[in-house]
Each structure stands twice: as structure tokens, then as C-alpha cells.
Length: 340
Image (cartoon, rainbow, N blue to C red; front, side, top):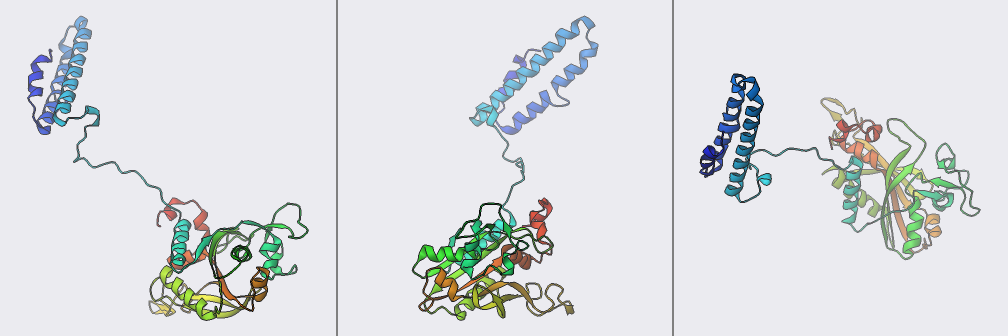
């Protein structure tokens, strides 16, 4: 069982194939070592222990010889040797959440037309969330059924503390920060309202657009909305404005976009589109900034005008992919999240 008789043969191996064949010959299932171990039953009982030790030592010596020859052949340590033809192990990779992808897409779209991404507090005073936006104390949105107030001492000038119910609280802050227009802001943040159903969650995300400058009109607003709709939802997607009322814009509009399923026709597969039923899907609210809001932000409404909009990120994702339950975003179900 001296390894010397095998050493010359191993050292003469000049390539990977020969060395692999010798490894199988000596250490494989039907190799020399296993053959010797099978013969142990033929050895006298009092000699089996010594015999087994000698076989194990031979196995170790052969393994070391083969590893040493691999090092000589490849010029690297035997531990780092690998067969490049063997497929690598595939490990699961993490990814961004679908909402994070949407935030990146929306930010990129508006940056291309000169909008600056800003961030403002998710906790604000009543003044910032309501009064600076022309919403008086008796406005329904200020009821504790619609807003999430914080148990904190009330400020005599600013009112109660509240989790922001919309990103519009950033309008006043941005106007006061910039002071002198032009202003082109995109504010993306979490918002809080005590609702929970298939289309609402207590915490959700909004993106707020604000543009203030001289001679800004609805024409500029409509052009910007069409640009966003086409870049985010796809080519040929259009928008329309429907008269509405918001306390902080005048005039105010609801924004609709052509349905991404039926392409605005209202029909699919010979019948009515089940997603929109009319060819249009509601996107969110918009309008020309109310003169009071401009004045409260330190901007002269006789010189400057502007428009603003606020859209829910969860909603635009639902519209883009045809999803039917907003709660799936926060379920943590990997089967849902891996689709994106």
C-alpha cells in the first residue's frame, strides 16, 4: 500500500482529463481504495484495525498527490481550482418594491422637463396641511374621520399636529423656499388617511406637481399631463380634464387617461371593457393654483400664476398593470411582488 507506486503515474498526468481519470481510478466508487476496503472481511480479525488505518492513510496520500498535481498543472492553489465548464450556482436575488420602481420612473420623467424632486415632512401642523391651502376650519377634510391627528399639544398659531393627508402641504413650503418663481416641483411622499378597502390604504404614496411662473395657463398643464401619460402609461395615451372643485385650485379638474386595456375604445373582445367601461380611467385631481394659496406662499397672484396636481402612486400602478386590489402592495406576498 505504498503511495510510491502510484506517484509516478499521477505526476505524469499532463492535462485535466488524465488527472480526472486517475482520480476516478484510485478514489472513485469502483476505484483502488474501495476495492481495498471491500477486502477487509478477508483480513484476520486481529489485523483489520491496522489494515484499515493503512488504507485510510493511502487514501489521504493519493488525495494529496492529486491535489498537488492540480496545483502544478494550473499554477494556483488546489483550493481555488475550479472547472470552468461546470454551471455556477444560481442564488435568489432581491429587487426593489413595485412602488420604489414607480417612484424612480416618475422622478425621471419629470426631471427631463426641468422639475426638481423635493421632500417635505410627513408630519405637519394644521396650517401647512389645510389653512395654507385655503381649507377653513369647518372644511370636511379636517374632520378626524378624514385625517389622522397626533396626540400632541396644539400650537396657538399653527393648530394641531397631523399626519399629512396629501402632498399638497409641500406647495406652501416650496413657494416660501424659492420665493421668486419660476418653480417646478415634484414632491413624492407618504400620505395618511384612515381608510382601508380594495382601493384605499391608511398609508399611501402621492406625487405632487407644482409649476409657478409668469403667464402659466391651463394649456401648459394639459401639455404636461399628456407628456406624463405617454411616458408612463405608453404611447398614444391621452388625458382629458373634467370640471371639479378643490379648495386650493381654481378652476379645478379631475384628470382622466385613456384606458390602457382597451386603448380608449371602451370595448374589448366584442363587449364593453370591464376595466373602464367607457374608454377612460380617473387619474387624480389638478387645477390652477388658487390666488389665496399663491399669496399665502409669498407669491403675488397679480404677477404669477401656476398649476398643481396630486396623483396617487398606488393608483397609477394599478392603472398601468390592471391590478384590482391596492392591498396587494403591502401584503408581503412574494408571488405578487416577483411579477415586477
